[in-house]
Structures are given as C-alpha cells and as structure tokens.
Image (cartoon, rainbow, N blue to C red; front, side, top):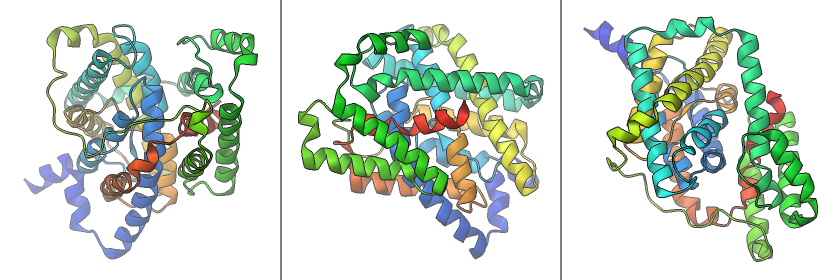
Length: 369
C-alpha cells in the first residue's frame, strides 16, 4: 500500500528521506524562482490576452499540486510563453481578447487540458512523446519564439497594432507607422531587454527580470512617465485566488476541444523535454506517465482557482536547477514565497510599465531562435 502511495504521490517518498542539506538547496531555489514568477506571471498573462492578475493566480495552485505528483525534482511549473500564445490564438477565435467571456474560456481551457493530460497519464500514453523528433520540436520552438516576440511589439513601442499571428504583417505595420512610436516607451523597453540579456550572460541565476521590473517601476513612478504615454499594468486585485465554478459550461467545452488537445500535447512536449534533460544531468529518471498525471492535476486544480493553462518552463527550470533545487519541495517554497512577495509589493506592481513587464520573454526568444 505504501509503495502505491509513493508511486502516485512521489513527494511522500521524498519526505521519507528528507534532510537539512536537501532543504537548504530547495529553500534557495524556491525563493529565487518565487521572485522570478512575479514579472513572468504578469508578462505571460498579458501575452495570453488576460489581465496581469491571472498570471499571478496561475503561479500558486499549479505549483503546489505538481509538487505532490511530479517526478522531476527540478521542474518549475507555471505560466509559459508558448502556451500563452496558443491560448490567445485559440480562445481568441471564440471571444474578444481580454473580455469576461475570453477569461472564462481560458480558464475552462485549463480544465480541459488538465483532464486530457490526467487521463493520458492514467492510460499510460506518455510514450507518445517518443514519436516527436528533435527537428520538429526545434522548429516549433523557434517559430513560436518569433511569433511571441512579434506579438509584443505593440507593448515595446506603444503602438496600437492589430492582433495577428503573421509575423510579417506585424513587422510591416510597425515599419509603416514608425513615426508614431512612443519614444519613452521604446527606450525603456529596449533598455530592459538589453539589461536582461546582459545580466543573464553575467549570472543566469540572478533574478534579472525582477530587477528590470523594479527599476522600471521606480523610474516610472518617480518621473511620472505614466502621464507621458508609458502604459502601465494598472489595478491588480489583492488577495489570493478564490475557488470558482462560474467558468463551467458544457457547450463551451465542446468548441474548445481542438485547442485543448493542441495545448495538452504541446505543453507536455515542452515540459517533458526539459524534465528529461535535467534528470539526465543529475542521473535519475522521470516517469513520463506520472508527469502527465502531475501536469494534468496541476491544470485541473488551477482552473478551479482561476488559472489559465500552465506547464513546466525552460527558463525557470534552469534557474531552479542552478539555484540548488533537490526536490519538488522547492516548488512549494516558490508558491509560498510568491504569495508573500506579492502581498508585500502589490501596490508597487500597479505602476509597472508594460514594456518592462513583457521584456522577459524577449530575452527567452533570443535564446530560442
């Protein structure tokens, strides 16, 4: 009986041999990733077409649930750029981006993704990832990086550009309206991207995105740049995400089936790829089927607390590993630290410049292409 429990809830096995030295590494990694999640959560919510607060909601419950069921000791679960892009592209077909209906459909998508992944894990379908070749994954990642970067040019330049998945259309429209670019916004945005890239070259474990957001927020507040054309994040509700069933709708679930299946597979591919790479580095194995169960449970639980689809991310996992994570306890610490940091700095986040908040995934795009 104990063996079955440990197989289904790997954290139980971890805690049976947990010690002070392991905790020390988890504590350092958990705090570091928790800090990273503040700017990244908001950035990826904006990318998904959602208010920034939903990125904050997606950075709590999914982490706690994955920590219970996941077999990767270093994987950092939460909002990621690729899934955010798929959400805005897929859900945007059925509702106006950013509207109340769009938000409900995005949350319902998380529930659908969770159910699909959970059932795939139960029926031991993790082998499907073996049919995905490296060139396909590499091409998909590079293309997604380009589209992600192009889709955020409007926040970087201050231009009101039409939403499009065609990179060339966005670039052409930006060039055509070059004289309308908001100079202060562009200067802050480009400076933020350069700072993140340079800081990461210096030290990858340093919370570069947070530093850029803090500095950008301070400059915006001190100089009153929001009064001079610089768009800010604006009002962010306080408190933790509340349990909700309002998004449940069977007819909506039916129309979301195609995008749910796509996100289920793509997010699993991204997560299992980085989980296997880190596991090989440390000489242990991850269970592909149990990972499906863990990611599925994280999305199911997250949906009931207003989270959009989440998965394991490349950049945060790398930082988690390099900061000393030894087990999924680091994810629990990240979630707790994240809630604490958000409570302390919520008022400051209101003045975060959107061009700063979104610059983190430009650094990611540079590494991906």
